[in-house]
Image (cartoon, rainbow, N blue to C red; front, side, top):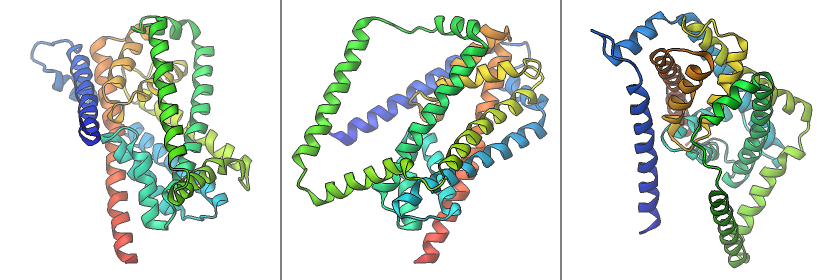
Length: 328
């Protein structure tokens, strides 16, 4: 089996898994006499406060602008001063691609920045990896705060998940990781005399280490905190937008944000399926919300977020195309 066919099959498998999880989640909506599942979700949408959802969209876009600014800060120590506008356009295109190809947006935004600013992909990708490492630290801190605030509820929720803690699974993971490391190390050793490979490795290293060469490190830290605070604010405005969830309170917002972040980490297109499975389960188990209302709320929440990403991504793609054509 060639590599391309294997990649296609893996992607189709992820799409099928996401579709199956969505279907199973939809089936939990109870049949109400004279009302279909789609009508049930539509009625939930009609009850939502549209102003809160618009504010949520504005806050989300502000967080993306700050993220684009932070990415620009990481690129500057590498000797590439890019415009905030081009950084933002590339970032939004990356989000758009991520909806279809998990983690594919990380590469696509670097290629878009290459076309707009002539920034080498290996350097910009190194900064993206550094950025993701910072985000993981922020996420861990936020999840830790969530567990501190709602320890009993979150532990009870995790205990209900079908997680196999057998030693065999951990052994398999370690073996796969070791094999992967050996393959990468072997490839680097074999091609060590290649000038192109040396250039790629050097560029990636420069991008990765750019976080230690910042002119204003405290500004970078402040931007990172602001991004995740704004993510939390978006969750808050969505929670208060629906009558079914507005009474849950700030602790629930923090808890659901943590569960949602864990669900979005699954390698599925846009978190589809995993998000629609875990978050409703959290609402039902932790806050005694009816299954139908929980599923309808999460479907609308995720659909609204996805709509914002698609709209912003398509506009950014069209704008980037126009700029590239104009430069030529």
